[in-house]
Structures are given as C-alpha cells and as structure tokens.
Image (cartoon, rainbow, N blue to C red):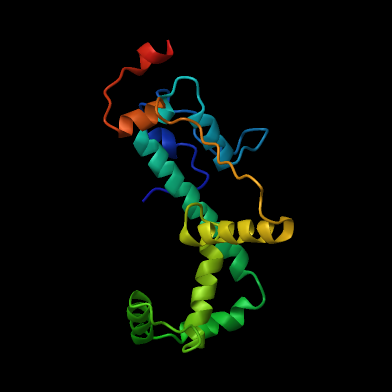
Length: 188
C-alpha cells in the first residue's frame, strides 16, 4: 500500500499519462500557498486539455479518496469530543449476534431503535459521520431536512424551478452513453 496523504508522487505515479513529467501532484508541502485536495481536483477537472475529465478512472479514484478523507476528518472530530469516551464503552460491549439480529430486523423493516440502546448509539454515530460524506444516504437526508426547514420557515414557494445544465452534448455523458467521438475535433 502507498500512502496517499501528503504524497505528491501518488497521482503522478498512478496516472503517468495524465502527468507526463511526473510532477504536479496534489498537496505539495513546498508550495508557498497551500491548496486543498478538493480545490486541486477541481482545477484538474477544469483543465483546458480535458485529459483529466476524460479519464473516468481518475475521477472515480480521486472522488473515492476525497470521500474517505472527509469521513476520516469527521471521525477525528467526533472522537475528540468528551462524550465519545462514554459512548465508545457502550459500543464496545456490542456482540456480533446483536448486530446480526438488528441487521435482519432492519431488512424486514421491523427494527425498533429503542430495543437496544447500545446499537442505537452506534447507529447515531454512524449517521453523524456519514452525513458529511458526499452522496451518502444520510447526506441526502440532511439536505431533505434542510429543505423542509426552509419551507417551514419561509412557507411553500409559489413556483419551484430546477435548472440543470444540458448533459446531452457533454463529452463525459456521451462517453458513458457509448458514443464514439473524437474530442480534438469538437474542441479545436
């Protein structure tokens, strides 16, 4: 395993075709201005040559790394809280039989969160962590609660419009749809 934290050679080593000179990786400690991992990825994906945008494996891997870093940062904050020490003792007392029983009950939609307070504590902590991870079920639930609270505060909107950019002609969407196209002809 290769360390992906503060390793400027990680992405250039993983994708030599995207970084032909072996330089330009993220989180260079010798830069005068610190650039976050997310901002650096945003720059790569908006690069004018479209080489990062067209490499779907690069997008998948870097998004995965970004999600894991977000989750780890959230867990670090959660563990540093004073109430976590008492809750960690409760979570450590859980047995695998209790967790299997709860999973079976959750699948059959008959689980009662009040039946096992230790398991309820674990689920609460998991929801807290997963709420900050992009595209997770809990983050969607958090957005839904935010929307409902906005409606409660401001009232229902008279008109509700969702504006999405057209993805019919986007090169990445066309590639996923199986269209064989030459990007150089389109953009140059």
